[in-house]
Length: 310
Image (cartoon, rainbow, N blue to C red):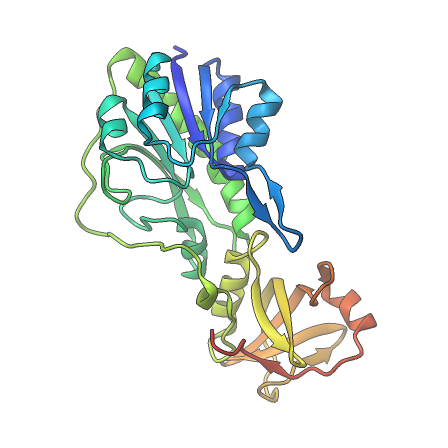
């Protein structure tokens, strides 16, 4: 049974869920997203993925500095929505909003594991082979609300955050639609999160981006795929800052530490007890390239280093 709902979200994964809700026939009188912000070297103002999607779908869009402003909540109250659906919105919901409507959140982990802003990235960094999506009714805590539904997904051995987030968003949209049906017919039965298994996934910072080649090849490869394709792990090559976008663990004994090697057309970085086979990277001020193409055009040296100060 379709419902009249408000939607709050910002990133591309949230846009996937929004499209699915529209496709399911829900009446969405308003979409709320973060204000447009400057992005890139030129500082050009760019809308969120959800803002762009709302425009494409002809939905009314609000971009308040805070969704908790009294004026915004009064306007939302006038719309007579049955629930507020939240996916990666980027603002904390305060008490009046949480108390006025069922606020259903799509969180991209199996709660209570990986509470916080970067559950997918942190799970990939940890080498998880399974993750999932949780629908919860939001409360005032950090992803601590009661659980409505959980879906589990296997993680591919070389899958990056972009691919995994896309699959989780599709699964999350399906679970959210099922949860809204339960809300409509009165069968929704949220349960408290277990006290065991709690972990946290804080926002990605500069220290997370810097690669540490003393760690195992698999650990380094996991960090690279966790930050691809939206952030990029980084290191110094010949004193210049590069981003690495794809790599895999490789067996290459007797490599000199701190120096990249070329072997059979492959670019290998010594790290930990083995080597990293770099598949895709990005030189400073240039586009991403496959390692083989980079090797054909690179005229610098191959000294490796961690970014200073990270």
